[in-house]
Image (cartoon, rainbow, N blue to C red; front, side, top):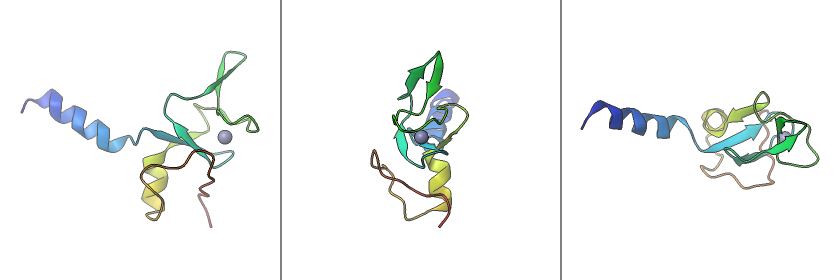
Length: 82
Ligand SMILES: [Zn+2]
């Protein structure tokens, strides 16, 4: 196995493929965002979160909440605290 393949595998573990929005505490697929005035915004229409600044990787949230699913449901709130 060469090194580049090992790096790729490691990246897949680190990144869940989902993002978690700090503003509305909901999740969406990585790369799914809303364009507003050239900014990348959270895809939920009632949220004014920024998809770059206000989003965390889902894997990071799950490291604090082991009970959360590996594949979060779109539209479901997953609070960071409580
Ligand atoms: Zn949001």
